[in-house]
Length: 418
Image (tube, rainbow, N blue to C red; front, side, top):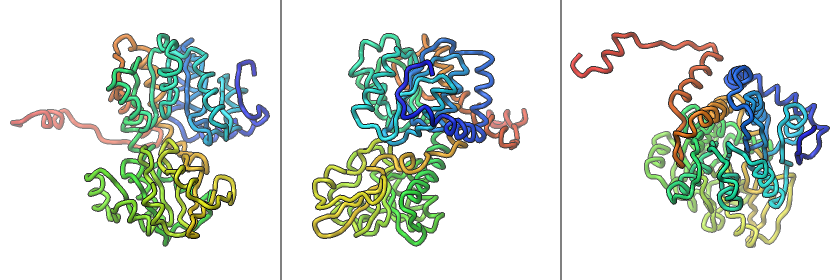
């Protein structure tokens, strides 16, 4: 352990390495990229600063970046998502500088981001844009050395798009979240499974026969609703987008306003990326014993300030499960302090879907380094060739073959008077 780090315990590395390699078994696309990177070393000497969930899946992305020749420094993108054994193995076994401790307080979280900035990163790899924001607001003197970045999640993309619109963004960023091989799988299938996993691990409650309210019907919310329905739950959707609301209705879900849905919710999950999605009107109508949680990136979706201010009693029933008693005697149970329930109470998305998401990250970083001089300071989609290649390789690793168009079919599709 020659490099600087701030982790819980290096002695956890043995267990961490076992779990990293277990996840690697289900990440064959990333493994192929890592093999090529080890031969070609496309990022030799490039300093990469990453602010991401420190999980076994992320560890395999970090291994791939190290194989490319990059010097990698990683901090957590959420105080509750760090797997301490994974962090230990990254430091001991793979030469990654890691600044992440599960449950770290806000001051430590910000200090860890500053440690990454201190390495003068050339490529930023972010999940939620906290590192990007810190660079632009607290450490602007470091911006000159940044080639560009990548962003993993919807919330971060929204922030970066706003920065670009205001002319504040100082380097190009690739929008990993909206790659088809990311949001169609990671967001839809990964969030659906991992969120239910987190809820069940935290509560051990039977889901079938109960009512779940899902706030937000994007790729994450629709995947969650589908899986909750498959578990035998009655699903209600809350939306602000009329098209998404109509889509949810056509899929067979009840659609209603949050304050009305509150009367039925046994379990309520927010997946919008916005603030105060569950707010005072919903709290006042919420049925006794409701369980509420969030699978959006930040802890802003549930108005915890209102709940803390109005509760007459708060009791920790078990780690990351808190019961709030309101003046009229009703109780509301909050999971993971309103933070990402799928990462705080479970292990996040399955490795198989993160395989594609992180393949996009690795290939986008390579593309960014090669084409930096051609890019403007704005948010870019992942090149279609990368997206398609990730899908193609994923199919190959699954042993799935698909048809190809004949020359006649290609000509027919490109003609108006065939």
